[in-house]
Length: 70
Length: 70
DNA sequence: TTTTTATGTAAAATACTTTTTACAATATTA
DNA sequence: TAATATTGTAAAAAGTATTTTACATAAAAA
Image 1: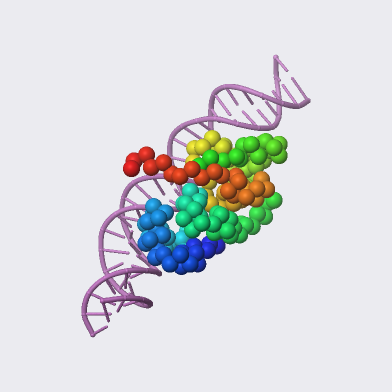
Image 2 (image 1 turned 30 degrees about the horizontal axis):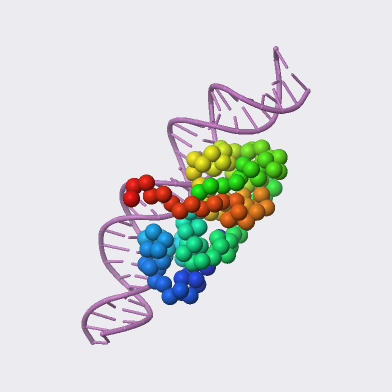
């Protein structure tokens, strides 16, 4: 899963901490997601998309897991 | 978070187990999500949207978190 | 009616997400 | 340069998602 959070955050000239506060999480959470430590929960993904004024699928790019059984 | 999984699953005449297999999860996971026991992870949300041929934000309706303890 | 399929549910285990606290390194500003 | 703001990181704890196994019930099909 790739995301465009840092890119959009910088577009709005927000620090990780400012974005975190707008999304009601800690700056460590934003930092971890920007640095691909883990993916956000679905509701945080929606919240971030809302704050950054994009659709969820514009903020995140899903790269399919290889389904060797389908 | 509301979702339209059951509605779309039935449209395609899939059982929970069939949808589960297409999304590479167990039928208990599909059942729990349909019955609002918890929300899927972001990547499962994308996978389900892909299988059900809709955009993530069409499959899920984000209702701002109710912070029951704030 | 009997068999099979589909759904609901539950507990334990494992994995993942988020918070809290804390320290270090970098970048920016005074 | 010195002070401040920003970012990276880490460990422990708490919360959430998913699997596995298992049983019960309901619905559909034979």
